[in-house]
Image (cartoon, rainbow, N blue to C red):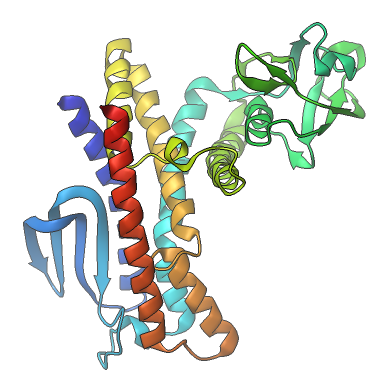
Length: 355
């Protein structure tokens, strides 16, 4: 039970930061906030301060920042729809942006503790596609099919999300096979076809990497922390792409709040047993993953989500006048119905997996 409560608290923090982004930018742009709430459903606790009611609601998923005149015309000078379009764009975009900021801060905790996984080869497997293509220990991979490689996870992610695709790898080879500060490296490229491994049921290149390296200085800490957020975003988009291409089933790829709470609870328990440092890393990893995922999902141009609202605001920016509020409202309502239907499916799928 304690682990489940920890998972719910973690969700609450991520949602709180998202909604606080909307709230803060609304206040800074002179927009009135009717209610700032964490959770959904009936109120468990609330209080009013100034024009705003602050609430905690029964269902620990989601939250809201309800603004004056957000979905309809309102003569109030603090109404959302009465503000300049750029002010409204900033308010809507602030939620996902704050999620990325939160993810970045916890990525710094992770990188400071464990370093980064450098894409430098430790070796290649005998008879593997990598060996046949001429790759060897000491090579530093830089691009895979024109996608930049920052860590060896990029290679694994690409081969997983593009199973069986031919791959062109660009890499650098240091003189003598060892990297020396300031030393020149020869740039090379190789084209290879991943081989399917029956044991692992996956396409593999046959490459082996050195592992994690400690970072050197604040510059590397910032660089690799930003990379951690980027990796979460890219992996989310790649997973969506696999579903669109029907490479994986939707019910296998999509996990809802119930499933996530269960997984978070299990890993939190493992972290508690392993000690405080492991516990910190577990929590930081989950916040990094969930906060960045929430940020990117909210930016998708889906009606009723932040991305859908931003799309209408960008159309207004280009046209010089807003889309008819009634038509926009109908689109968002349809999107909300679709999202609620999807939520029911995801919840049912979570429960089925847990049984």
